[in-house]
Length: 396
Image (tube, rainbow, N blue to C red):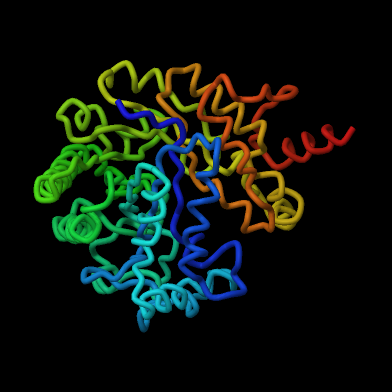
């Protein structure tokens, strides 16, 4: 079995809007830098996972628009930070120079000896305003094929609709056709966002998503045979089996039927959402690697009223990033619980607040023997008042 000590997920967005140098046009060297910064000497990152879509594509596509095409540019969106509005312009510029943005990342990662897996967001719901420039015509033109907007994570695609599933399969087929000759696999990211059926219809979705995964597996195997190389199919799902089955992810059937090659279990956004139940998955999935994801978010704390909303950004949000010791605790727990490796999601996001990620952790977390002992006691907070009290106590 291939060793995957740390699997590093890049959302692609942070690369292509040039998070480190948003004040200058993105160059091929800049793109490579986002891979090199995690593959330094002593790094335990073995697998680089690149997300290649979020509603639209980060590559030239015949199925959905690419960010930056006329009418589909983040610069025209109202809910995108100014620094990130350059994403479309950067993608256009690279293409004008004869460069494939996603291909640049793949080539750099392979040059550094990393396993490369492309991640596909199966139902991204970041931008769902009716006039958004960040969703494709298919979504705009078929509101009847969306899930209930009032449901949690609702408003994106309803996978009970055959046309929706065909649309997503066409996207995945194109990704494999375009990049299958130089990647190691494809990840189905079911956690962006975990709403695939209308409330009350999720149990019917178990068979639907299993059959969908079977169709993707066929695409994987066909591509692998044509390219004469092995290609993996993986999935990122909820951190608890009951959550998976609740939302239509019959991961035990996927594993038993040989549809996936490994599984990543994950919370949605913050580590305080609950413990990753490695043992519960391992009790029924004994033949596949299971990786545990650590989020950049820490406490699962949200404003409960107007007073808390008024102080949230200034007094609360700065304490919602996972600290180095929190990463260490989470990693040690996962290793002790029998995880096969550590999966990092949104590790780069501190840059959005002007803070550099602690990349030195990438030389620690992939081996329990190299993880520095966390200091003191720690518990995740569940309310704004509890978190503020914890912050004050730490000052004393």
